[in-house]
Image (cartoon, rainbow, N blue to C red; front, side, top):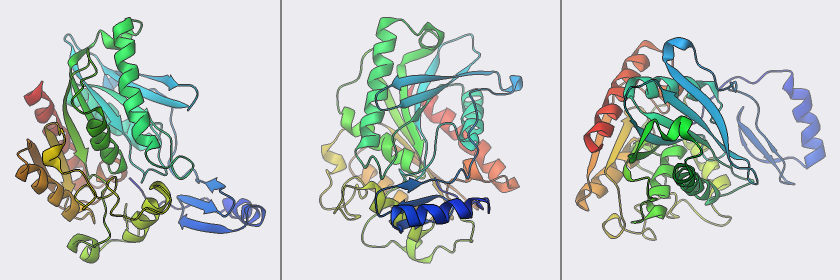
Length: 339
């Protein structure tokens, strides 16, 4: 998930000083991230970070919990009021692996609404970012969080959340880069369910995949200046996130490439893929679904018309609000069909 949000002009003096101090920028996505020759990274605060509170009308209790103090990985819990145990959703935010936070206000609002309306307990993971921590760091953090949840449930030391969710119905979810993480965490966990947690499915919202060969939607989708994801930004994120020297046909970027494990040979959970009509990733997302289907995997997909990448967290338009409600209903239906 990325967005073109105007940067505070008062930052320009600081940025100029940083350029002299750190040897000039070598990679940049305007307003979001700038990487300097000496490895210094700047991320302007373009999206407000908020604390773990929601208005009472949400009916959702929220709390931040440290998962690993050594890597500073933490998670934000969303626990709806309920008289019954609820499915557990482990969620990964977007941001091209390089920006974003579980504390971003746009995610806080969306996940609070999702938890309340879809009837699920959500754990939103704040994983390490690239380029300081290139892939597979984010995947490792995702697996670590699932294992941590398992350990906490076994110990019974986290009754405030573990007693309120159905540990036999766990889903991995995310949007954009977070959807990529959810898919790869599920693959890494393989056939071993982290009992007492039982994984039932993955929910991939506009999954961030790529490849050296351009798709039709990458070449021809007309993007507005404020679009959430452009092709140049996508390429920059992959250069910063993938291991040094890797190209966009690396299996972590292109799950359908020659070097990737075929979906027929790997364990793939039942999967819901949410695709946006005006997203440059549209065709890659559709191809991914087709590949899963050909391999005999359980896959559902829905195409949301009239909206672009990350509309569910970045757009306040009327059409986006309609599509967000449709998405929440579809996610709820998917979760409870496998719970």
